[in-house]
Structure formats: C-alpha cells, structure tokens
Amino acid sequence: MQDKQDNLELGGRTFHSRFILGSGKYSLKLIRAAVEYAGAEIVTLAVRRANTKETENILDYMPKGVTLLPNTSGARNAEEAVRIARLARELGCGNFVKIEIMRDFKYLLPDNAETIKATRILADEGFVVLPYMYPDLNVARDLADAGAAAVMPLAAPIGSNKGLATREFVQILIDEIDLPVIVDAGIGRPSQACEAMEMGAAAIMANTALATAGDLPLMASAFKLAIEAGRKAYLAGLGRVLARGGSSSDPLTGFLRD
Image (cartoon, rainbow, N blue to C red; front, side, top):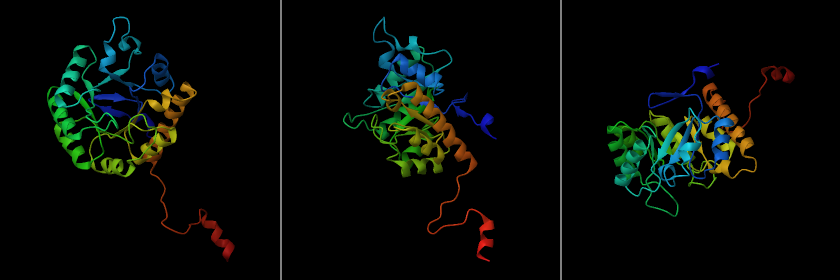
C-alpha cells in the first residue's frame, strides 16, 4: 500500500488531499462541505471577493489550516494578472496564486500567451504559480520553463459540468510534462474526476459540480471517494485493454475443452 506516502507536493508544501475547491460559486455551506466532506486543503479565492465590503470578507469564512489559492479572475492581460496577484499577497493570501487571464468573456477560455508572460514575472517574484491554461503541449512546456509549479488545463468550459472534453490533450500533458497536472474546469461528476485521476492527473479542481448538487455534503463526499479511487487505480496500474476478441479470466477453463 502506497497511500501514506502518496502526497501532493506543491511549492514546497505537502498536501494529503487531491481535491481543490474552485471559486466560481461561493457560500459558507460550500466551503464547509468541501473541507469537511471532500477533504479540501486548498481553496481558490477570487481576489475581488476578499475585500468587497467591510462586513463581508470571504477570508473570514475560511477554516483554519486551509491554504488559500487566490486567482486573478477578471484579468484580461498579464499586466492585470500580476497586479491582482501582488494585491492578494498584500491582503495576506500568501504566495500561492492561480493565474487566470481571459479576453473571451463568452466561453471564458484562457489566453495562453498572456498566461506565460504573467507566470514568468510572478515566479521570478517568488510566487508559487499555478496557471489555468488551454491544454497545449508547447504552452505547457513554456509554462514549465517560466517557473510554474503546476499546470491547470481545462477539461471543459468553466461551469459547464461537461467532463473531460479535452481528454486526449490533457493526457498528452500528463505523459510529457514533468509538473503536476491539475485538471481544472468542467468536471461535473465524481466519475469524471475518477477518470482524470486514473489518467494520472495530480489533482482535481471543482466547484459548480458541488455547488449545484441536490445534496452538497453527499456530493462532496462522493468526489473525495472518486478521486481517491482514481488515484489508487493509477498507482496500481490499470489492466490491459484488448483491441479485439476476448481473453479468459481463469486459466483453469482450458481444462473444460479437453
């Protein structure tokens, strides 16, 4: 059994959970369920939520021991993303930052070129940079060279719950990039999270799938179990898949033909 030593390493820190709560839809109930039932140790925070009103600061609702992952949601270019990241650090959110840069407000697709620029600047300033990106091998390599601590390819458009629409491209990143690959955006079901973990993903980020569930604590628990099952299956080594035909599962059945 490898479970006890199988931790997620990011930015010099060790995490036991491979579930990360995203920031798309927030409520105190959602945060509590993600931490208590899904085991989340990292919670993404949109910086614009951290200081919007004197009486409503999302930081006040974060459980102790949770690592904040502020994101640069709303940034349209590298300059704006860098400014938001620096502001988050000044607000006490630490050095972790998720880079989100989007010029497209219809589909919310990331701007890979500007993301590389921001990653390089912030990594040089000591940030632990986790860039949200469209899964492209060359971009992932550039992000690694720029100092990213991980890459976060989208599975499907943000909030869509459509699952692994970019499965083949995410698999290429897992196979070729020597960084944790955290599947972000679009994961809508525990089974989809399990599949991504079976592929070799390092972690799963989800928000809408939990926030829109009928029973939030139960769904959070389902995601926890699915992610753990997928990770164990990956570590165990998945069984072969035959291209055609069948194969007996019991060698003793050969005697029946004699």
